[in-house]
Image (cartoon, rainbow, N blue to C red; front, side, top):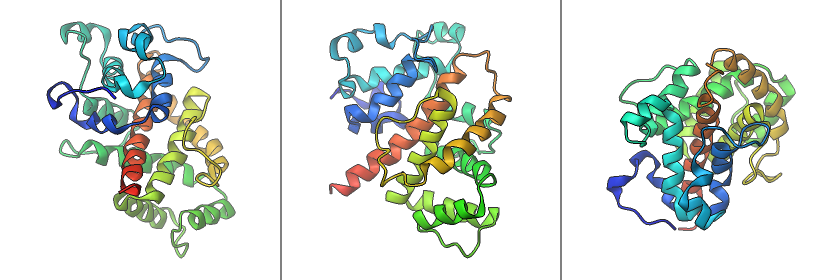
Length: 250
């Protein structure tokens, strides 16, 4: 794995030093390939020395991968003045939150804003589910079904996200996979086994409708937005996935 000191890495992305190759694959594909699986015009990762040397051993150059995302997070002219270093990851997350009309505070941590992104997608999707689909979901997630109102289920999901563990990871997989399907036309390649995402198909359609509405509000003329939105959801998932994996092997 790539070695680095804490001075040259965005601290909100430092957890990726524990990522495995297969866990980083979807993020790398998002940065390099568009919805038609054609290389993005502005991407530089596939031409980098690290990519040429290590290929699909993504964990060997995870820092370079994060740098690519940070470049997409800033516009081209601004990046020139930043000496090609892009923007801080927190700025990217905040920008995605603004695009999705999510309220957050400047003192919110990156993970708190990421959780608000998951919650927003969940809330918009929940209202498009049938009663049977709702009950199936709360059963799978082991959430009390005594209150299936929007307020009741929102509170339950908020608590789930704060609590962490397998169910939080499971929820993040469901949302990230559905967002990937909706924006990039392809789901996750890792972590979506049948047992983990039993009711995944229930969310794919409704999340697609959610992002059809959100997409009309986003500056789709900006290629960067087509990268940063799904990439932030991938990283949100990776943060929970890696933490869950590390806690499991303790």
